[in-house]
Image (tube, rainbow, N blue to C red):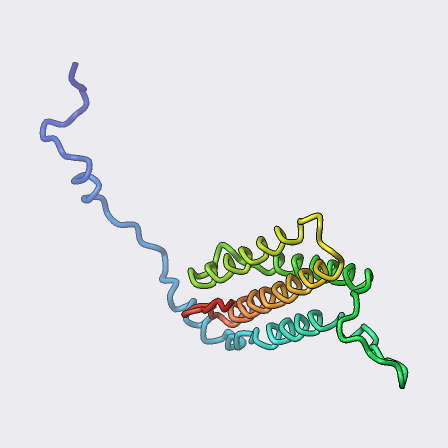
Length: 187
């Protein structure tokens, strides 16, 4: 059943809407906006983030060197022969384990996996692969104290390098850059 109220000459909806008059405001807003823009104080210069990033990098360097700075130097009494390969102390192994945990926490806090470039992600995977190999070696139950300490020293050294890469990546990101280019993993 056809609609009884349609006109004889049918208009499409698009044609009917195009024939409607445009709605105009009472007055133009552009002169008021122009006066506000001219009267507004100039925008402050953007804050430079590099001092903050530089301070973070310096803090990372101090944190990485802190165990060496705090440990007292070993001084042998005069006339006593010094052993070249002394057996490591149990406290040294515990200090290495603690530093390793701190570096792992730092790396997990500053790593930005969602915004990493392909080369930075590949370098991070290389570090993690090396850490996994060291962890496998450390899991051997027959290791003596000296070998275990050497492996923990290698692990801490590797974590320091990885933390340096992550810190540099964050420093560059704070300055608007990224860690791109050809990164080389050395063995």
